[in-house]
Length: 199
Image (tube, rainbow, N blue to C red):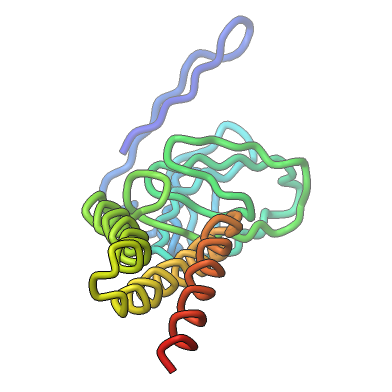
């Protein structure tokens, strides 16, 4: 690992320093790798040009981490290299945010470790989309064609289950759950109506 600080104009010339693998082991304070500065019991082997901390943090999906800035540190910025994290607003891969000056602790919660905004694989996304379309058609077509109309009940049960899971997914990510909520109520209305009719 190597770091370089550059000073121009009347400042001293550039200073370059490096450290080997043995030094890195003393720079780990899980889940953070202390690149510059100190955190917990770990201190970087690289001398900082000014009082600052530069941490590389890896969190698993669902894992939480609180960062308490040291005394005198009031400026904090975060960049997401992979996946997404709540702080409390969601930050996605490639985004960088600077926080308002404060010495208060910052709470992080990883949403996913995978690339992309949701961490859901393309295959799962396709499956959910096909299941939703099939559920919608399964509710309408059997009743419209009068072919196996009892299937509408089971299609509505399946679609309402998917929408219920979608509501939980969006609420956990602090996103609006209005759309899946409306679809859930419509599917649940069909379930109630068809079940009452069958009785």
